[in-house]
Image (cartoon, rainbow, N blue to C red; front, side, top):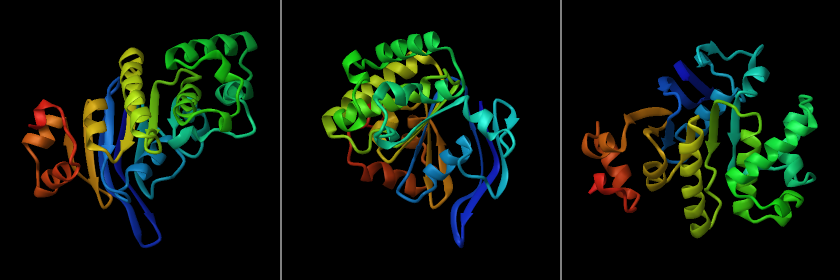
Length: 247
């Protein structure tokens, strides 16, 4: 569903992403993981068209993402950032429906879709009328997911969506996301720095360091067949209880 062909990005002298070729399988969840500044978010921003690669191509379902088609392509990509990225002057419902209204979707369709997504994300009806400042962190993140799913895009990108949450809320939302990913069967790319979260949510894990892919594969691949010592060290440094495969 998503293909990067020799894609790279620099900011001045800083290499944000070295030439990288990657494929993201359809209807599976791929997790990008690595330390801060390793290129995870840069890679995600190039997939959604918010940053243009200096070299190479980004293809979505076989179509190259360009300056000409970027706006249209983004309608097929849901994008979730930390704390939801909601507009503070709009209610939760208006945040969710904003793009659909701008595109002229019928009001009845919008209302039905908001109701469907509220049930999916387990948001109470009363919360939809509140402003972001009146919502909990977990509710804001759920509203962000609703907004990303409003147009039913085949691709869903999430950039550290749970990073700002307390441990209990984060655990609850990890379970919610896993349930939603399984139910929706979309192509999901999720950025995190937490190996335990990657192991729980991801079908496929891509470990980056200093703008380069160190290893890509399943959790079992990274734990049992690390390509270099950095992979072992990164997993060990997490000090998390990974699934049984890591024991």
